[in-house]
Length: 267
Image (cartoon, rainbow, N blue to C red; front, side):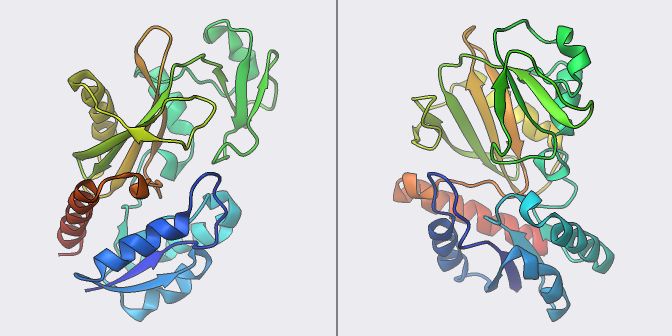
């Protein structure tokens, strides 16, 4: 059962080592699958070699190779090659429109607009976060009291003085573990987090909304001053997993869940 494993081992992520995580994962998955690793820019050219599926892992922000990624998606869909996560994701995989859609639908998400003329629809705050609608990994993020930019090209959100950020990690629809950053200024200095039933219900609502039958998803949230959780991001393309911060038993459980998911997906 050969898999094409897409990763950018040299991507210089801030506060993280993508290569270490993918070296670990591929070393474990080799027990059950034949694997070939490639850079995201090479994935389309390797599709005709007959892999049972393509698994996209730590491949970096798509905007750095947007044309190659769009071409790969089109080729995989045309050939019927299964891609994990499936290409039907409605969240980050499809851009940032989902933040606007979830805001409009009344989900617990940081309120988001894409037109400065609609600023009155957001809570009135001293500072707003503004970032490109097609951005990723905080690229182009600015904070300002007077947001501007072309309508439809930027995302505008109130800057929230949150207590901490927390991430919930899922394989398919099964919760695996949670990590949080106690210091809001140090996003990737993470510790284990013990979620409450209310926390898990919050996270599961977004997993259910995304309707992916298979795949790895990370639900990123912040704890607002009111005490409620608000969605920051639903990562359904290539979420970094911070596996190096987990004890061996949790790593083993995650690998087992991923292996079973991939077997089901390719079988």
